Image (cartoon, rainbow, N blue to C red; front, side, top):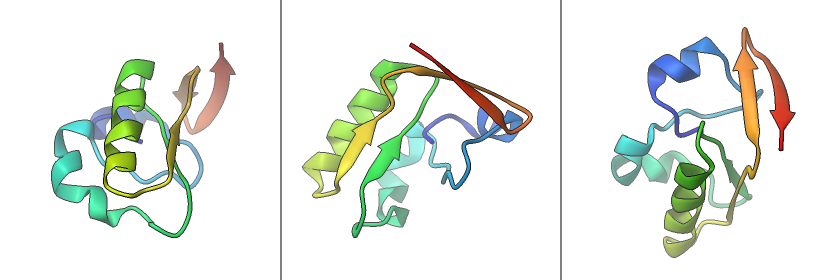
Length: 79
């Protein structure tokens, strides 16, 4: 989850790790390299760019190509 801390605090996907996109260059090594990483943000563009960044550094990555509304730790997916 590459949303900022305040957005992440309002709701998260189960098992999500929060690394805000502005700190990704400093903290991407926290991500597991032995499994695929799925990137989520409120904008698909940021998710896509982040996923491409991770792939350049040897991570298996994909991004959610949908808007995921998260409130009170409940989530729904919209195309």
